[in-house]
Length: 625
Image (cartoon, rainbow, N blue to C red; front, side):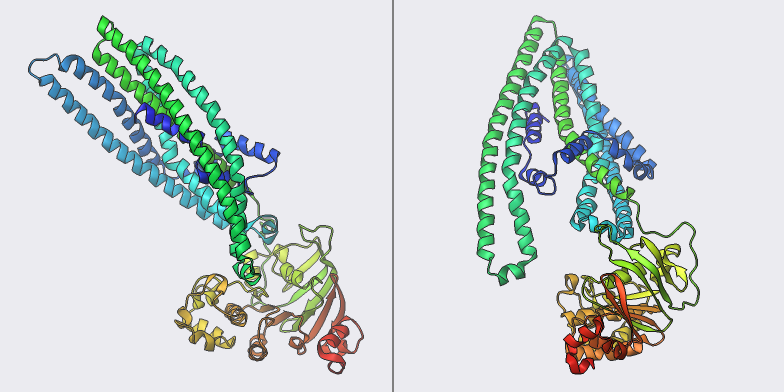
């Protein structure tokens, strides 16, 4: 690496790329000043990287191998100038050329050692980086999967994915190449400076005087250009966020005929960004000229003094060549350290965010000592004076002193206006949250004292908002029941009246669904979700508006299927369409987080209460009677 190319890297460090600026000026990064200060402090410290220590130490032999290869490659490079000096001073003086041959053979041997050590270092450190990032990603995802809904109410899923992908990628750079380059160039810099002093302390003094005269003006000018460029790139960050948001809702955008306006606003912002890029290029060109001018002047001054010393006999030509090579090594190592230090600092920040994530304790987890649920399962459910407020809305009570009991095999419907607390009952039953007071029991066991996995295996849920994945139809039905056979999957689909439309798909049960099942209709998605719940074969069946997206014919088919599925199971149904709950054993009417009525359809229809009013609105006076 030449001195000028080293300073070219220094210049790139002072003026970041468009992508770096876009990332740093994005709405996610532009936080409050206090948050920004904290982030900068985190980047300045490498302590967060210590969180990776357990992952690295799991592979001691790769670590030792990489360290040995790193030291050998650095020492091999530092030996080269000494060999060149002896060749110039002694080899050219020989008459038969024997010494020249020996020195060239020595250089070849050094080259072979350097090649082997460098390739070994490359393999060891990159293997270590890939292994560490794979382990970190697995641990982070497993931890994220265990964090409850309360955590995701406060956190953005996009940020979690960024930590899982972008942050772990930066960690890979630190655990692998960047860290080894940092150590190697530190050895090279220290070794080259020491050898420069040993070779000629006078020339070394000139170099030490020249370095601050070059670096300080470049840093000051580069910081000013970087600040102005970042401010200009804010417009592009906003435009990108605007474009991403509108493309994610492309159907809405096109339905409202907003394509032209979106394109116009984005194009305007892109033009502003182009202007900023052009200004940055002019600044970078000027900075490059300044850097090369200062470096060239310094090199010429050092060479002039060295050449004068050779002519006067104070220094040999070989010693001058040795000094120049060490000076080039030192400059290259310094430039590399400037580049690598930025990567290491970014990786430290990424590591800190990952370690923070791993340090988050799940608010809902199995107790240290669990109470066993009865076997075989009974399917009994009870709420005892339960009151609950969501963590994000602590001042609003979603449930207020709710008490009821569902016997084994009974079908109970939860009815009431939106926001009354019906879905909250399901969330507490599945222990996504714990109530502030009261108890929730399944088969007589307080859910907060049971093993979480065992508890949830007793429930099958068909949610209102069906979650399907970009996988085959069979795997979507098998979700949560990974070990079941293909025949069992098909039997569940038949029971959910989904088999007929599945077999009409291009590849039947092996058909790949789009993200969130976009290739299916709403009714088809809900029947696959019902088949998934049937396959789980749990004693408690939870239906949250399970037929809301079905047409009249499909709803009738699914209702017939549900009759068979409900037999022998405890079923709790949430429904706004009262036609789906007429056959329930009991109907619990919920309003403002309280139970206001309990009874069957016939009794509640004549009570004159909330259910009666809802029935009148849906069926008319005649149906209500």
